[in-house]
Image (cartoon, rainbow, N blue to C red; front, side, top):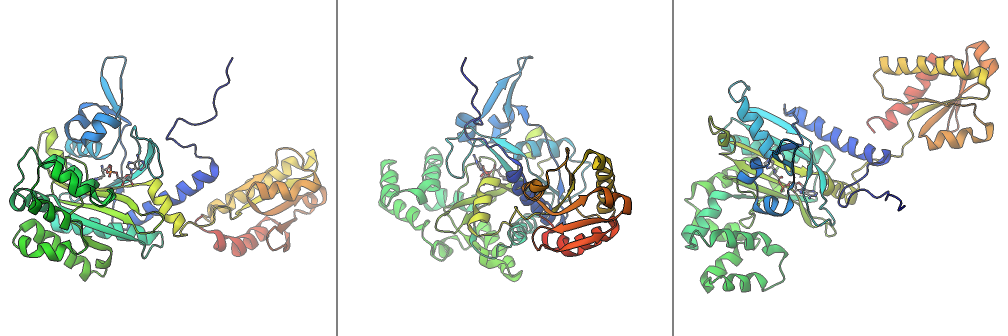
Amino acid sequence: MSTLSTQPYKGTRDFYPMDMRVRNWIFSRLRKTLRTFGYEEYDGPMLEPFELYAAKTSEEIVNEQLYWLVDRGERKLAIRPEMTPTLARMVAAKQNELPRPIRWFSIPNLWRYERPQRGRLREHWQLNVDTFGGEPITEDLEICQVIVAIMQGFGAESGYEVRLNHRGVTDYIFRELLKLTDDKIPTIGRLLDTAPKMAPGVFAASLAKEGLEPGQIELLESLLKKDACTRLAKQLGDNPHFKHLMDLTAKLDALGVGTFFRYDPSIMRGFMYYTGMVLEVYDLHPENNRALFGGGRYDNLVGMFGGNALPGVGFGMGDVTLRYFLEINKLLPDMKTPRGIYIAHLEDEQFMPAQRLAQDMRHRFSDADVDVPVMTSLSPDKPRKIFTTAEKLGARAVVFVGPDDVKKGEFQMKDLVTGVQTQGPAPTLMVTFMTTYVNETHGV
Ligand code: HAM
């Protein structure tokens, strides 16, 4: 009989406790920042009707990446590849009851049948931040501010750039400046989207193959240049969508965060539902130079379910690319910092007193609202092994429970990092532990 593999399914990850610590730390930072703007957390089901994506998501996702199944009642279902359609469905279902503006976030796990590679997996977790019911300019401005606040929440004051574009501007360039016909637009859009990853000359050659004239090719190539905004300003000056972007960047400047943002007319974003501003956040580290996360405005997604078209805007930030960014910029704390207490006993007779002491300490830590694990040994400790066991379990201090200590009601505690010993009843040990260690390790 062949043995079963211990490997997780391709493109998925096992989260052992140390990985889970990192994930929880990252998510708790995200939640903390989002609460400062008044965003509330929501969630939805993993399975949705297949048509929810067939209608509006990107063609690549629907045709190549969707995991789908037929249930026992012959219903065709998809495992969510993104959260935005679920969010639109949920908002549409209660749109008259929900207080406006709606400010919601979620951290769902999503599934896409991708070729696994660095930064791209088949299952990832994605922070989704979205708002509905305000004016486009104020909402877009808020979403941009949230992005900076999230990065600042991780201590990132540089190392990334938010590239902004607008579907209305792209449409104007394609139709009015390039005179492209409807049938050409999707192909040229896709080529422009992938152009930054192409070898020199390939973009121009592909455009020529599509039958574009030299003048059209030159204009499209100029969209990829850093100074595209200045080059285009003359031709786009009166376009209301271009004005929107300029107004947005001016407001971001006035708020002191403008340096993180740049108009980039080559930003396309693959989703069919975007109708206004689109954005892509880039990691600027040379070893990691890639998109970190992205989003945009969708004005008709909620209306798809009947009722009013309630415009919304938001972004999705994947945990895989974010973790690379935090690692390479050394923004993750040392998760191995020991932070618990290990209560050791040498004989069976001290098992129950050790349990009582642990119970007492846990209540006291809980009353003080500090998060310190108090671990006991489940069988008598061997004296030689106490310290190694405690260290492996992530304890910072060991408290010994011997026969004389139980009689006196006083115990000895040893700090495994500094070697300092403290003698006393539980409250004394607690105070020493909290003042010495909790400040050092709080939040990890
Ligand atoms: P998306 O660009 O498909 O947008 O995904 C957003 C982010 O999720 C990506 O930039 C990346 O960080 C992460 N991501 C996506 N696919 C994978 C993958 N296979 N492996 C690892 N990370 C991945 C959306 O999904 C939109 N629904 C976002 C949105 C929310 N727009 C408005 N609101």
